[in-house]
Image (tube, rainbow, N blue to C red; front, side, top):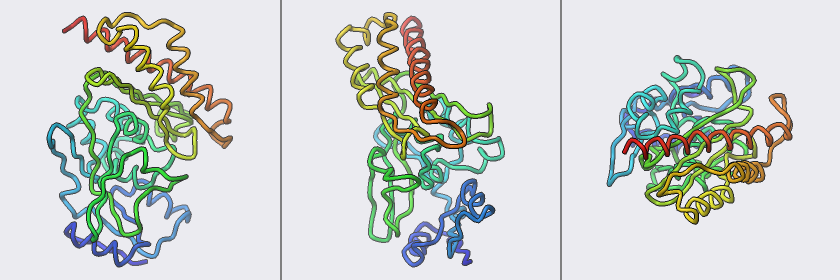
Length: 292
């Protein structure tokens, strides 16, 4: 197996173009597991850890551009208040050692339906920035996932960064696993309220071939909050609204039976997570209004 270790981003893109079958590796928290269990045996590894610019983040015209090599630990400690939903998801990833090595860019590249970063990225309408020797592409997150562990990257492309707007309202993330920590989710759900745009964002994982948004649930809740004036009044949500929101989220799922759970359980659990996160998020929104 070839081991490629470029020192610059330009060298990394050149190596990717020459070795399109090489497996990119940053934290290695997914790649090394696949190698150790002989799930994959790529002809080459493309080590990106020497490319310092991948670990940077900045704000451009009010939008966060976060390098693909930023670790979960740094995301939590440096961006937790700006991206609370994504930070919540990052805190559930593996152990402290994994969070010190693993990256959101790696989660995106692996594109597993169970990846913890995907639901909040969907709820936040993130955009993936892909580079190649041919140029730069910006891929909306809703177009990024194309199948089970497949994505829209071309063979010669690498993820440079992702773009996401800082939170303008409360966000939540919740997942269910077979134990409380260091576990792949049975299902997961993220919710984002955007009162400045009168919008609701959702994302869920481990309940379809790809991470998905529950667009009908988003539209239902946004319409309900607008028509009732609750964006302004912040009055309590009626139980039937919360219940219907959970039903619509479950309807968006297409789960399977596997060793971690049945399809029936996943759909039920997703509905429960949606109801709970909506209750928590709305409570935070009401509390913010009283403190303002």
